Amino acid sequence: MRRSLAAVLGLAMVPALALAGPATADEPEEQSEQFRALWVDAFNVGIYTPEQVTALVEDAGDLGANALIVQVGRRFDCFCNDALYPRTDAAIDPAPYDPLAEIIEVAHAAGIEVHAWVNATTLWNSATPPTSPEHAFNAHGPSATGADRWLNQREDGTELVGNNSYIDPANPAAVDYVVDAITSITDTYDVDGVNLDYIRYPDYNAGEFQNDWGYSETSLARFAAETGRTDRPAVTDAEFSQWRRDQVSALVRKIYVAMYASDPSDRLSINGITYAFGPVSYGGWENARPYTNVLQDWVGWLDEGIIDTVTAMNYKRNWMPAQAQMFTEWNDALIEFRADRHVVNGPALYLNELPDIVAQAQETVDAGFDGWSGYSYANFSATATASTDPAVKEAEREAVTAALRAGPLAGDVVVPEMDWKTQPTAGLLEGTVTLRSGVVADQVDVEIRPLGRTPGETFTVTTDGSGWFAAVDLAPGQYRIRVVEDGATGAGASVVTVAPGTITSAQVAAGRV
Image 1: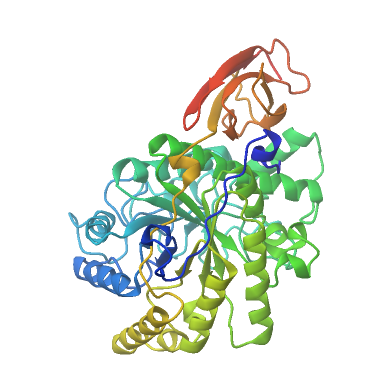
Image 2: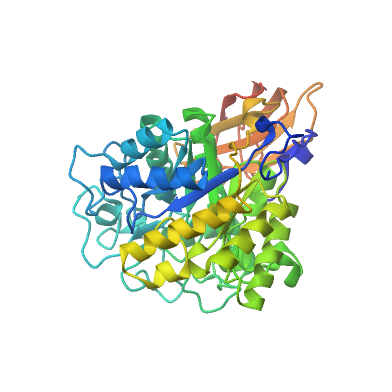
């Protein structure tokens, strides 16, 4: 289901904040808003020791960064001590050292936000299993069966590509685990947001405009139950592709609402795919590769309001004319699709040398983005990527930082305000459908109808695999909630009142579906 709830419900759009360059004499400092960040991957130096954390924050300060996107969840593990994800097996300093707690303390003292970067669907990537028996790979990987087996499966039966495995976003238990794990981080740690990576179906597909995954036993059973089909769908089947795409959207929606309940000031950002050329080269968003190849509908998520920010992985080699065109086409698309949220451009420092890095940052500023985020802290240039010498990497980081600060990233800036959260004019609704038979109300249609003078039109949402549903950006007022699934009997209705900036809960019952 793709819709703009703001449009459906008659809400005014919140103007997007433009990316600001350095403040001028005519421009007050408080108007200089720009999300200026670095991705800090957990496969390289950054947060393995307190000394690395200190150096990271100092380097971020030199760049004038106001945020760090720090990878704390790589493969259903955590670079932290107190989350549902088990503590990572990576060679970090031994406990009680807590990398996430350390980076929060040091970065916040320097006035820099910390966003917990979590890979949502990458389960494991080593021939050696994780040490924790509670790790999802051990509990729900190759040794598990039935619904307890969370592994995504390709159409040809492949579950492991090399050592890489993924969870199936159509598995309800896996979805709820991811949501609970993420909120265990936001509940325990003073993060400023969560950055979702791999919030999509996997790569390793036979074609560039198809996705070959989603063939787990659980996925196919749920698809058949929803559609009534008895055939095995093809990878290019339009109905199956949309159904799989909807599973990812349902996961994003559930994370957004859960984070809002945990701390509404936290920002949910997702790493948006920008494979190949932009939508303009393919006749529109629904023909572009993010939508067709990995089933990621970040445009729909912006429209619906279930994310706060797209941090676009706009990884292009500026020195190659075709890729420079790709970069520009995606810049144009991101600005066009911004809706009433934020879009941050994420160029690949590691693929370019200094002049092209500066050129892409300048293009980002000129395009009017809400921010810039460089990938990545470990390798600030192609030269740094090619070298194993820490001195070379440090020299490249210093040179690129100096050039950016002297040019497009000059001046100090503040993180843009999420005024849809700080000055809310709309509310959220979540609920659960309960069937008197005790069966989970999986994929049941629920009608949400505004009552009285509440603005907007009636619309329908669908429950996820746990019987849960939600809607965001609802105009304040009263709504009637009822099950409208074909074949439903004894469906009751619930009337609720939605208020700005709050989550209203609803329980709806039906006899059977």
